[in-house]
Image 1 (cartoon, helix red, strand yellow):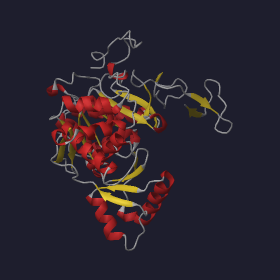
Image 2: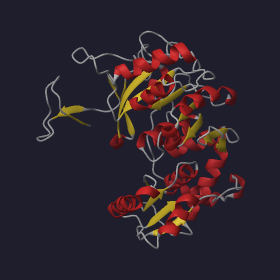
Image 3: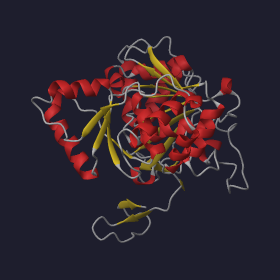
Image 4: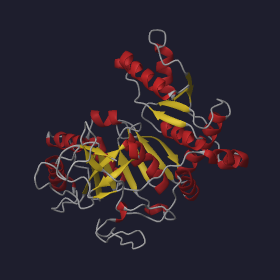
Length: 398
């Protein structure tokens, strides 16, 4: 499938050895402009399907609904709350689709969204201390949340001190509205949002957005507040017109094979996780968990690595196990995998290895995470920050 997706592009300076997912798929440098085009083209098509711990669909959001609701919330942030472009807002949401609507609204209003890990009720004091540090550090005066976290805040604020900012529950804001209900003046005001450059590095089968029936489907449990989950499984796919099937990382930890079942049920073409995600699936299935109905023949790309190094033995074990039992592509060279490396400072995308698992000659326990860099990187001494010679271990600097 990767070979079929290869696409030589003289204009982009690409070689035929690169799969098509490696190149930017849009000439737009503005996230908002490309997102608007996609939302208009695929207005009634499903963007996000959210699953519960049992794999049942909780809710679905179309591209049009996300765009219309985010327009409404953005206007509410600038109007009712009196925020200005450049102000900060802490986002404290339980895993779910409400977070994404709020995040897009912040982008469109020019508000700097600060996603935060949802506070754990079992470790509330420690979690609130961290949340308070984040709030003070970024200078936020407003906190946005959903009904779950808002209820937790209301019931625990007598005994625990939450950050002293204005908290607002955005759940359901803008439901039922559409673009026809929103004024032209409002759209002009929201053009002031910050632009984000997004390169697409997610799927081996890119489709024309005018063909909804053949749109790319992907599945993910990655945390939405984390840079990889946010960019790779929400913001990027929204622009590209994908259908994302997402669920909570807590559900994954409770049942790792819920991930594989979601991939199989929705015929996902790609998914992504750190190595430990693949390892947990292999261990759970090898221990006797039922995977008889799991069919992974649809998968053409498995991203791995990101902020952690890729361990080839873990990935090989996963591929060998699920190739035999669940029809996962077994290509021998394991080109199904795309080891990669990301930096939050560079909006995640740094480099990816398009050739699959390429072993280190000196360290067979390590795999290359990218020979083609999307930014200029060098290896420096951690103390002096001086550039080190090739082959010398050090810290990455971009």
